[in-house]
Length: 161
Image (tube, rainbow, N blue to C red):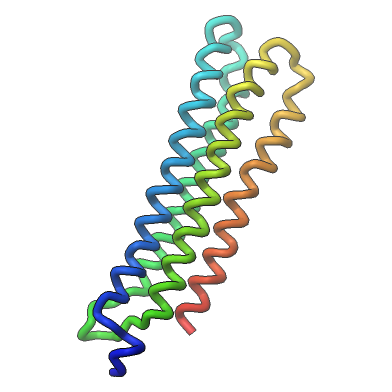
């Protein structure tokens, strides 16, 4: 075992990728859910019949946390205790980059989904024709998190081979 390739702190850097993914991804999902939920509560006071269709931003925000969970599980699954295998510094930094990739894009997407969801459902209450446009904007906001997931999957694949 070469100490330069597998220092004892390398797993800490890899574990930070798990933490970054879950912390930032969950912040994005929570913000999107809360912000869109405020709009849905406002719509529910005047038009309770629109609540089910207005839940789309909340569901999309929750998906962001799933992206973070997937990467966190993949990173954790590729780590082994020191007696079984060595963990290189390269793998640690790749895992940290994967966690940051999915976490920060999830946070950005959650922020966008929350703002669009809040104003979108309020506008939908007043004018039903806005619904398709709102959903398209939400999809474009959600795809930011999906891009982060794709990059994180590629980075995680590089660390194993």
